[in-house]
Each structure stands twice: as C-alpha cells, then as structure tokens.
Length: 161
Image 1 (tube, one colour):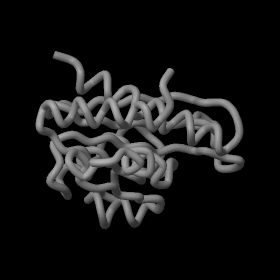
Image 2: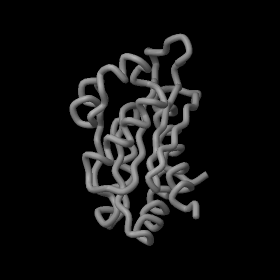
Image 3: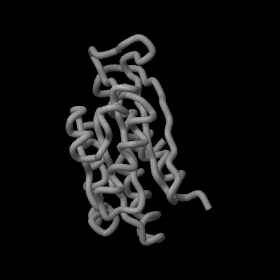
Image 4: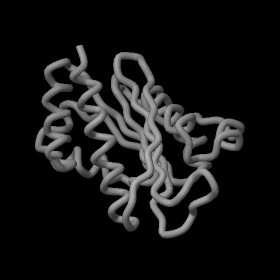
C-alpha cells in the first residue's frame, strides 16, 4: 500500500482533475493528514483547510457539532466522524471532506472502544460515508495507520464513477 504522501499526491491529482477542493477535520491524527497533504507542492490548488479539533469543545465551536450528539455517541464514534466531515464542509469552501476521531493510546480505551479504535467520516459527492476500525500497535502506529486508511479510502471514493 502506498504511504500517506503518495496517497495525498494521488488524491491531489484526482481532485484537480475534477476541480474539487478538500477539507479535513482531525482529532486522533492531530494534523497528520493535513501534514501529508501539504507535503505535496501545489496542494493549495486542491486543499482548502484543515481543522484539528482534539477537544469536544473545539468540535462544537469549530465544526458545529452539538454537545448532545457527543454525549449520546461519544467523541469516538462513526456519528461524530460523520458530523466532523459534514461540519468541515459547512465551515470551508471545500467540496470533499474527511474526518478522523479515535483512541490512539496508550490509555483511554473503554469497553466497546479499545485502544486503537478509529472512526472515519468522508463526504464525497454529497454522500457521507463512515467506518470504524481497530488498529494494533503503539500510539504512533495507530495514528499512522489511521492517516493512511483515511487517505486511501478518500482516494477510492473520489475515483468512483
């Protein structure tokens, strides 16, 4: 599988070809997706902005996610990942978005949401997609796998006819 920067370059080419802009909303990845994207020269042509919303209050303030939704599902949930992706779109000039939220460790796991849990949200073509995976490894490995998976799935969604 390609690494994050290779995936970001492919995403950039696909977005440019379709004249689309991307935004991202990151929690557990802490800006890692935005960092991979901005490694690509010329990414300003297809990358609008990134939100690093690590705290619940920043998710509410910057992405318009209701406190009630966070209380109902928890910050690490497909529902919040979807709301993050949709909120990033609503608060940017972008057409496409992705979001990540998770528990990278080494602490923070709870019953039903172990360390390594990552939830994803993507909005492509006006359709919101979500996914929940559990990765293994240390904090660095979980975050890296989350970045790569988020970008890989985004690329596949953009490339769908």
